[in-house]
Length: 554
Image (cartoon, rainbow, N blue to C red; front, side, top):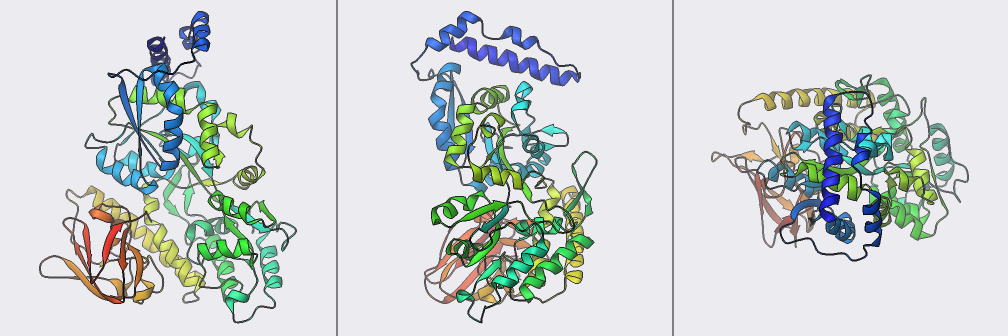
């Protein structure tokens, strides 16, 4: 029985793949004839015991975050028994899946399957690390927007299981009716803040959002016609068409900056403060996503989730999708596809994913049967969302974009100067990255080495995570090492190494390019020495009582 199921699945998937390779437009129905016969189906229903896979069973390895890993382990035994395979699930932090996979996969030491974000595709596909996926008839079980997110250069490289986007979260007691436009948001904010004084903590605010958060600013930008990259006729992003300095982007930045200039949004707030203020009733509206939903529900406030207000156009948030991807270096790619189509893409497993971490399901048999008004409201707010660009050029956008926002919200530069400057920086970064990719050997002859992170404001920078702040730049020594000595207040900090004033070349913990943040703890105010070795990519942080460890991703 077990062998028959395995062989049937292999025959079915092989037929699908051969059909796809043939390039014909006609739908092929023959695989149905190779399905499980009636008498075999009856036998399957009668089987109740779950047996361990044989000692010589093929083992497939999956890398996933701890929440998903536990769901897969719990659901796996019946599949393992039926198909005679063993699923080995390893837990990694979200960012660590990517950074470790980039190193392990080319060496033949990576997993067969990884679980990650769709916007990893640009880097992974460009490096030849992912195998295309063909879902066959099951493609109809997934939402189009999620499938599109995992499509790169016309090929599907991931099987999605959820999508997420932000929406307008509103305190319904303070704002009974959902604002339809940003002009209404401004009017409500002025009304609620009319009696505010100098004490920020004692004030009441309407709409609040951090002044350095490009991701959450994006839907406001699109509401006025702004964009990051233009789109081709087929919906793919065009890296030659950069919209960071477009009139719509600048108009949105002027609007957003005016809220700070009027004191409607304090300069000093961050995401954690906003979350606290919203559940405490001090802030009436903000943009956030399902990651804050549980806390808001537990707070007991009367809240509502609405589509993001319009400006001159309809607002479009970014859409993120998570899914399963197959290692191009896997020794068992066909079996890995069977795991996805016959085990993961089932109502039971997909429902378990949702139960463990509620997000809008990409799997329609689960999404269409949900009775969760909050998730449904988030899905409505994201119905026209733009998939986060997965092209490699997106890596050149974030920091220049964030810097421009900071300059505008801190009133240090006007929007019509800050955003064209950001566009120029992005264009140069993309060009330099392309030139570096064509070079025979990566250069370590850096013009600048910096330690951007949460320590920067304490060391004199305008904000944190600025790769071009002169106050935290290191100095090149005669021995080829970059050094900097700083007086650092007691506390816990996270940093990375950024080269040439941007994020294209950056190093994290243990010298990994694009690696995890480096966490260091300073027990008392003291001098701290930072030493970077460009040959190894490693940063050493030393000082009295200073300890280093690995942190999350930025």
